[in-house]
Image (cartoon, rainbow, N blue to C red; front, side, top):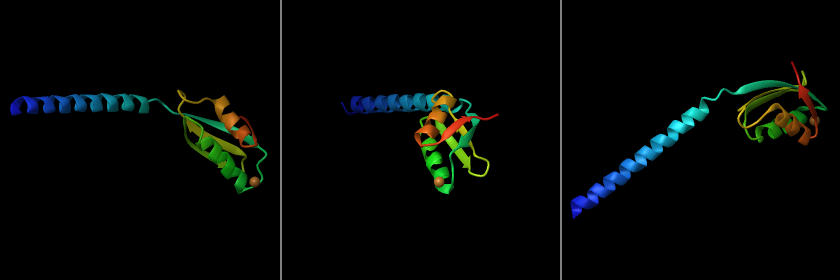
Length: 105
Ligand SMILES: [Cu+2]
């Protein structure tokens, strides 16, 4: 009786391990997707407060991995997961923050 119970517990444990492994394998696959980096030309910024506002808006946009905004050059360099975001979404995030953006070369 005890043996059967133990066998049951072991099989549940094994099943859990298989599920966890399967799950992390999938995550690894997702992490391997190449992030895309774009440069946006910004307008309407006046100070570091503007920089922070745009950075925050970009950072909370789904798919954005990292971003840096330069007040001096009026540009934002944004890395994002192309499966979750696109250039238009990034421009919209800047516009929602109250500034203008377009793709820079
Ligand atoms: Cu400002």
